[in-house]
Image (cartoon, rainbow over all chains, first blue to last red; front, side, top):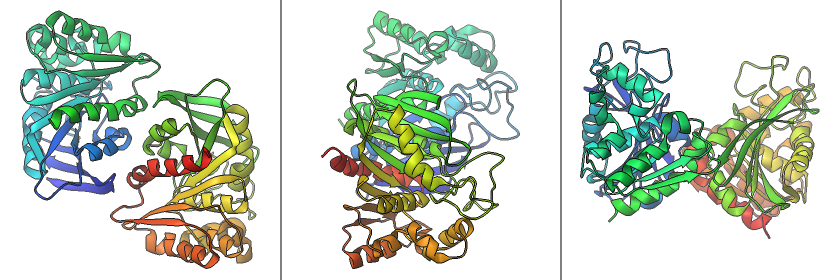
Length: 277
Length: 277
């Protein structure tokens, strides 16, 4: 693992790191914010999964999480959204291929060789971060935006007990039920929709997976709400299954980092309550 | 004036606007954040002047000012740093020409036609903002970063009584005494250094100009500190003249928006105390 850059920020250290990934077969870049802490202390960690077209840099520059994480003593990790590099296959659309890994392990050619973001986020990166940073992996929370909200919800639902706290900003709640999901899961996993359900938060909840609780903020002026995000499907799935959920519709807010940054401190606080208990 | 974009953010509205400028003879773009407020209310306004290479966008995306401005009811305005456009003369360096207006009215050809950022910031933009936004021009504060910190200090010093509060992040405190200043003022104003003194905070203070007080934060790990910024010259000028000043050296911090965003809420609070009195 190599440090790409490091800044003093908000009473902590914001770093960017790169390492050769076994999961993707490519170099992978991620950012980590570590608040100042007592020597030897290990802090809770909050994973943030980004949305379509993003790298680690978007939330690192625009997410406004550092003040809240420093105040609550939380390490914040932001991975990339896909493998990168000239050798990695891509698609002409912004919603498939590079920048659009959808947090799945692809099974279809030519994607299966590199697009293994599920393994990367679920297994490889936690081991790396646990080895190199002062984190307590018994206290993990996970959140994300849009495609990354989908990633946060489905990774937490498939790994019961690993995350004490789960939230999302404007998540894709059901890839089975929207054009982004149909294109991505069809492309990465093939046409058998039965293989898709493990990557669909609503289907996982209907199938019995549970979280301790969950927090979702969704902007009402988000132009992707009706056609892609369909927050109501998550509300219905949670209600039908008895899954506790706090789903807040936010008037006037869109899909941008202006929305995310507005509610970031709320989410960090919500995770902190559950991670410091 | 036209609205380029608008986002709901932090309980307010973040907009970007463009207008044809009489001062520069070009279109000029700026951003304004307006917190929600009672109908008919007029809020104090904080001007933020950006540094070399920046547009309005850098602080708008990375400055982390909205939460603090919303909490304190302050309008935040971020102008561009120079005229723009294919017709505008430029220099190959990042430190002169486009992105480097230095908040002066140029007198030398070919710069004098467009590089009139002093008039733009001191006169034209306040009139425009006062006419189109719910601001109370009797309650103005000004701040800025690097070249923009120089702009904030010198504009406030030349306009006694206009600003109730003045601060700066890592300002160029004496263009007369550093390579950035020598290149810019020499280029825009010609070789007669007597004409430069009106654009030098230390010289203005030595010449008797006064502010109510001022706040400066400066990172000790800022690579421009020794060669360009020379914060100690401001401390010495203030001490010699009896100008009240709070100048804070911040260990570990550099010149980036990671530094600015760390101390932004402090600065907004400092302005708010003086603007709401």
